[in-house]
Image (cartoon, rainbow, N blue to C red):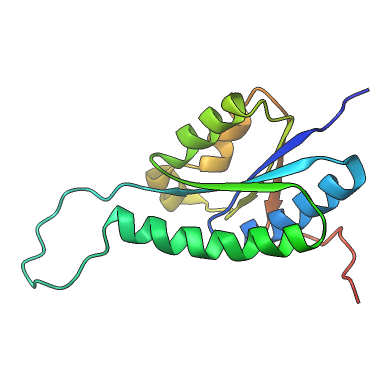
Length: 153
């Protein structure tokens, strides 16, 4: 039997990734698995800002992401789940795949924005890259798909 022990849930704070956290919660509860929440901050290309406006650096973005990730982590911890989290700087797909191997993840549950056409071609698809290269199953959650998890009420 396939035993899920560790679920990696990349989070970018979009609707799709928040929905993915709910799926990870349900899988973790039913399988007795732990959840690892991961946020990846992409490095900014070096650019000169001639207007002298403040441009947040990776460290600022990382700190803000850690605060937001802690809120999600604490919500899951209060429900008795085993949860860890991390904010990393790098290419999202590469970091997700590295964490999958490093943590011996059994399942990745992540959101997908469902970009099509030119924006997907230019931006690439993190979810598609992870699905193709991950060494474990990957569940893709779309923000606009039918909800399979019942609302708690």
